[in-house]
Amino acid sequence: MTFLITAGPTREPIDPVRYLSNHSSGKMGYAIAAAAAKKGHRVILISGPTILNVPSGCDLIPVETAADMSQAVGNWISRVDVAIMAAAVADFRPVEYQTQKIKKTTETDMMTLELIKNPDILAEARSIHGYGGLLVGFAAETENVLHNAREKLNRKKCDLILANDVSQPNEGFNSDQNTITAVYPDKEVELGSHSKTHLGALILELCEDFVRR
Ligand code: C5P
Image (cartoon, rainbow, N blue to C red; front, side, top):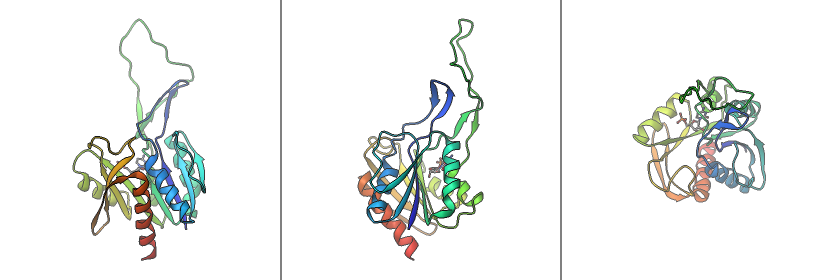
């Protein structure tokens, strides 16, 4: 099968030296990509900036901004069987990019940055691209984890949402460990607490099972 996997953060430039981003390491998406390639699947890994090595056998498409990631996904999604959106896409970007470095002034201590919403790449898979393959999203939540995950499953028209509680210390963002519950339209399955490498292999198996059904 062919997998499309988004991973890592996006960077939304403010001026030539600054950007808005988040603490995503990319480890979860890269672990799924590595597990899929190891099983002989073709993997298109569309990734924001990370310090990780590209897992062997994966085709990396490096991107910076949410707009870049959205375009790369649009180019590939009609050609894949499974799409797993593990990227931590910045929800907003600056309305204007300042071509020169923004300078401090002595006149005021305040500055306002106007932001505009980024495209929801996961939701666009069905709504804009008419993607009909297996669609998997993530939900990193600090409260009402399963309720919010189920809401995302319905709103973004996913087959499966992998939910994790990022309020737990040493888990989720930028950590090697995660606790995940797989939320399906009709059931929930706890995958438990494991290394992201092991969870990558478990998630890959869930996807293979789903497609085989
Ligand atoms: O709505 P929320 O950001 O919590 O949804 C998380 C899921 O949606 C993840 O799978 C993430 O990769 C995806 N997402 C996306 N594009 C966005 C925001 C989230 O693909 N702009």
